[in-house]
Structures are given as C-alpha cells and as structure tokens.
Image (cartoon, rainbow, N blue to C red; front, side):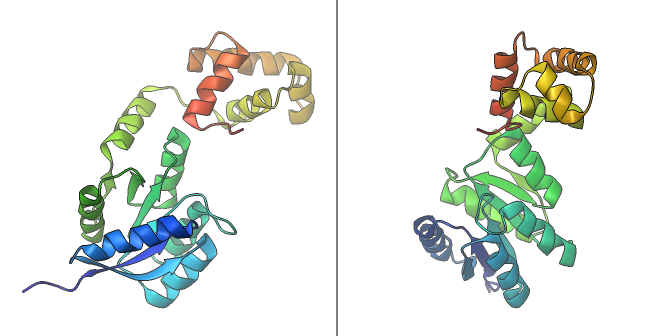
Length: 208
C-alpha cells in the first residue's frame, strides 16, 4: 500500500518556469503540488496556510527574496523542509542558502529523477546537495575565508574606488586599506585589482 504523496509548495517568480515545475512534480506519484507562490512573501503566507511537506524555493524573487523567506519559515518551524532550486551557483549563494536553513541546494538544470530523489530525501529529514554544488563547497573549504572587512573592501574595489576613496568610505587610513589589500591578494592568489575582482565575481562575493 502506497503512502500519501509528498505535499509540495513551489515558490518561483517566473510563471513559465513555475508551471513547468508544477507539471514535472505532478507527474510523479510520490509528490503533489498543493500551492504556487510568485514571490517570497507569498511563499511564507502560503506555507503558513498550507503547511506543505516540502518547499521548492527560488533564490531571486521580487518583494521578499528566497533567503528571507527561508529564514522566516525556519524561524516558525526549525524542521521545515526547504529545497533551494535556482540558477545561481556562486559559492556565497550556496553558503547563504544553507546558512538560512535550506536542507538542499539544486540548480535548475537538474534532471527530474534527481529532483524527485532530493524531494524524497528532504522529506525524510535528510540533506541533499547536487554533485556540482558539493564539489564547489569542497573547494571553498580549502580556501582561506575572507574577513567581513576584506569583503567590504573587495566590493568597493569593484565599484572602482581608489585606496583613498576606500579609506574615506570606511573611515580608516590608507595604510590600513593597503594592509587589507595585501591580505586580500594573498588569500585570492591575485596579482592585481582586476584579477581580485574577477575572482570575487566568480565566487559571488561581488555583483555587477
């Protein structure tokens, strides 16, 4: 005797993508879509009303984004089963999503079979990472972490600010900026500002 299907809420702002996900999920006997949300705020409201077994959550959405929606849901239920399903694979996006409380992280190029495998695993209380995401996390662990101040300075570098401009913005001395830059370049294995910014962009530390 088969059990009840896993009740799924889908949060995705692009209607065509959302409809496609609904059709795919409903093809599987083990799962059933019980709600569709077009943004994070709607996702939180529908989660409160429907209490789905699993949520498929996009990261970038209008109004309340996916990360904030995950935090709000997990604050009310630390056991809430949330899967991030997104196109963004930057290291920082992955880390932010998992820190917010998601149990799984998938990219939208995932095959339906793996999507269902992930839904079942998360519903059992397990965590799940797509192999390419797991590889990224493994590489990230091997790298030296940047301090909050270094990330700030990297962002200002990306804006084209000079050492003097960075110092004025952060209310620190130019010599302190140079010290932070030296540390940054060492950690990123970069030899120039452009190289450091390019590396940070690949990591998702800065956005353009």
